[in-house]
Length: 181
Ligand code: SF4
Image (tube, rainbow, N blue to C red; front, side, top):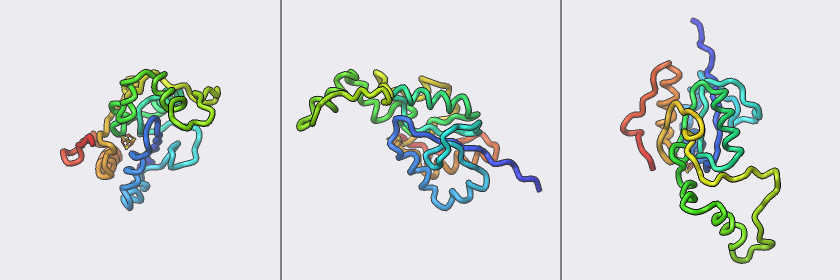
């Protein structure tokens, strides 16, 4: 019997909280089963720094700074199937609440106006990625192939979605897994 080559999977967190990655890990022992068919490339789960060509890229988090834009474009260029995972990636999520305020207001509130700040000033080291004026959903920056809703999507949703991709089927999300909270 010929074994199909493993699908290469990359993941990343942009303006996310890593909750979607934690929910991925909540697949628990089913991860061992998936690893028969999937191998990780660049991901917070690995130490791989350079993204290779991949079959699937899972993107957690919206886009809030210049580095997020760069990483997202790199994933789009290298992943055959790119997936927006979770509310933040799909519509900006909770971090997009800052869109109600100007970036200047947000930075001053955090770094200047907070009581008892020692040396209050807005960080400006050139190594820090510049924040965008707004937080954007990923589909406003690159083309996205699939959206997994939820904050976070459940482990069952991840499992079903990946299993169907492994089987070469068009992934469907069942009513039970379809949630936005
Ligand atoms: S969708 Fe929810 S769990 Fe996922 S990164 Fe955003 S806040 Fe965290």
